[in-house]
Amino acid sequence: MRVLVINSGSSSIKYQLLDPVSGTVAASGMVSRIGEPVEPGAVTVEHDSDGHTLEHDGAIADHAAGLRVVFDLFAQSGHDLTGEGLYAVGHRVVHGGEVFYRPTLINDAVVRSIDELSALAPLHNPANVVGIESVRRLLPDVPQVAVFDTAFFHGLPDAAKTYAIDAKVAAAQGIRRYGFHGTSHEYVSGRVAEVLGRDASTVNQIVLHLGNGASASAIRGGRAVDTSMGLTPLEGLVMGTRSGDIDPGIIAHLMRTADFDIDAIDQLLNRNSGIKGLSGVNDFRELQRLIDTGDRAASLAYEVYIHRLRHYIGAYLVELGEVDAITFTAGVGENSPQVRADALAGLTRFGITVDPIRNAAKDRAARYISPPDAQIPVLVVPTNEELAIARAATALVT
Ligand code: ADP
Image (cartoon, rainbow, N blue to C red; front, side, top):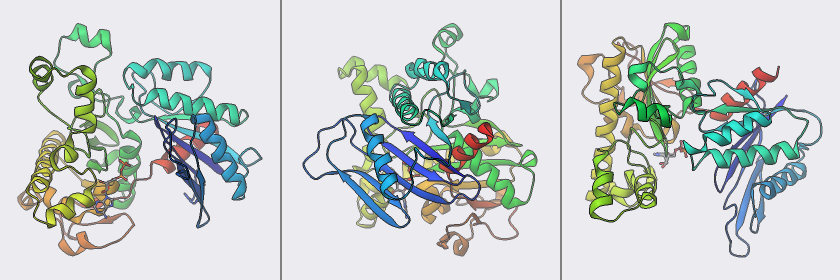
């Protein structure tokens, strides 16, 4: 049984063909620079299958053209998607608004609703819609399922999801905290319960998803009760290029005194802030290299990142009261022992300790990094959003 998972961005498409039961990936790849002019010979599609990489060079006019190339590469590598055997297609959709709170079988009305939610996610939902429509045309007979990044946080308690702004304005504009990375927080928290050997409904936990985008969540008995991202994926932790929390007064100040218009504000906060805004680089490995050379701006970026992360960990410890696990996931969370150690340093009196040897182990499996007798287990659990999407799609179609 195979499921194709599609993550369609404004100028890229990431995809994976995988077995939703075992998680075995048959092929995966990425289309990049969609709709952009490219220099001759530039590779725009990379396709990995059975240990081999196939490449396509040349401009990709639009998402449909990109997907046609992908389907050709699948065929060349021995996987005919249009033939038999494809069970479902799972699409990652960023914003489900108030409408979608669980994986949803796609039909025309669903596509329209996702499109209508574009006002809440102008950078993401339109691209998701284009991806969905292209795949539906290429694979009209295969069921397609939308899996929403916001769904896991749909039921946040009122106190956690409500912004303290004029309630009438908020209601009229759909302004609330929606949360993102939900597929990852749900998958990882489920894995944590498995590793602890407990039913998820009995576990209170904090999940720290630290990738290019980053978010924290507080989960009580399998249900999210708080998360650091809000109306958009801009709120909360310091990220690769996004500011996370700022005083909203900064926006009015820049518009009044520095002639920033709304596009300039968007660009500043989404693309030129966070680690990049402070240090010039957005990749954590590069940041660490700069710190090693004694770069003061890079060190400050790191300190601000850790400061904000600890702020959320503290908040969620108090919010949950009883905590059974704290878990790190995604690129930085899975790979940076330094971040994990610094995020939880000096908390032994709260029952939280990171064991240096366990923390330094280069292991790809879900594992403990706290000592065996720790009051609050600390774990590293690799996230796998594609597998979670494939399983959600399968469950809905079965
Ligand atoms: P995305 O949010 O795009 O899915 P990822 O979860 O892949 O991102 O995380 C990307 C981040 O993880 C980058 O900042 C990258 O530098 C960081 N990262 C990856 N490997 C390592 C590593 N070995 N050490 C530190 N950071 C790493």
